[in-house]
Length: 555
Image (cartoon, rainbow, N blue to C red; front, side, top):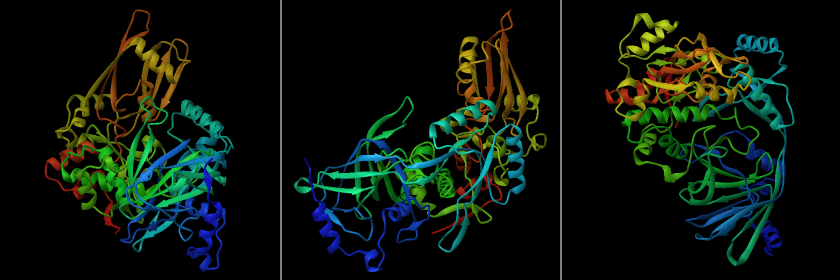
């Protein structure tokens, strides 16, 4: 049996310098967890924000070692410190894990607090569909280096439930019925917890503490963490050893499972995020544009999502991919350093800096893609090099889209020498069986497909609403992502359809002629590369894809 050092630890607490005790304040369990869960920013000595990013959760144990001496802080900063020499493989387990209590709902719309008319319209639309709704305020006003920013959002949500699975099932039904792109929102009522056990210390000593355990090294300490899960829930899921810089925090997740959080600087996270989002061999100005967009997108989400989690942002595709320091690249690191602290703003808000692989020559609108308020800097816009008067008001008809696809414009996204440029124009053919199977995966009551009818296009020409008819029924599909998934995962929703039918009227084959890869909102990564290849700077690239915004340096 592992030896416990709880008595020794009690003595350490009595002898160690303790800021809270010096101030006459005794932090409770709830106090310490509240500090962990708060979205309020803290800063490194140079003024750079420190971010808590979730690395792994719901696992049995976490093994790690550090390349320098480290301190174990069972009570957090200001409490006792147990120093561990470098080179020891340590393990943390969570025993007697207890789930927290939460209220779950589905986010139907997300808008700034000022958009009262748009919120009212969304409320009316969903109530007319028989959905009971409520309003939740999230986000905050915060300052960095004396500059004030507003991340507040108003969420229109469904009525709450204490069951996450029930909320997810409700989301799935709403998506199937109405084709919108929603998410599950969680509100915390009581914290999860459990007994954290740290083993592997010199002499076989064990440290135990309730709910929270922090490990700190120097600013340059590298933690090697073994068997980190990735792509969980997909066919690509697995585990691998990853390395991180910063502090480690061990706690419980919503279900009472062991969770690992990395507290590190914003720029360090970007070192790992940027090469996961764009070719590291791309021109420097394209990489710098991507770095600014990624920095802006990360900051604007703080205090809006993950409010019921012990971290501010996550390391997977729900947020931005972060896989630690082994995935950093010298060229993307240089791009992050060259734009250190730079973000895009609109008024006193850091913008939603969406980006995708290739816009096909026409940027998409955020409102038509996801619903909610139309933001002025990501409206639908022709993305060719030369002005084209006939497309100034968008691609409104099938005939205009066909002409646009068959006679590609001279666009930045068409001239890139990188692989994503090959998605500027594409063709996808499905035979009748493959088509019916793809549709059945999302709409099982349709049966063998007899027709596909485009009902509405967004101003960018992307299909916004269509009808799939079958022998047994029909489905109305709305929103860009749902439409792409209905047909097995098309590259984009900017397409026209050519249908072939058998003698009995059943579709025997369908060809989608399309443009672009991804949703097409905001920065076009192919276009950023193409613009840089033509000699444009990162500031000019950003001004093209987020018109009307201001490039500002925070620190």
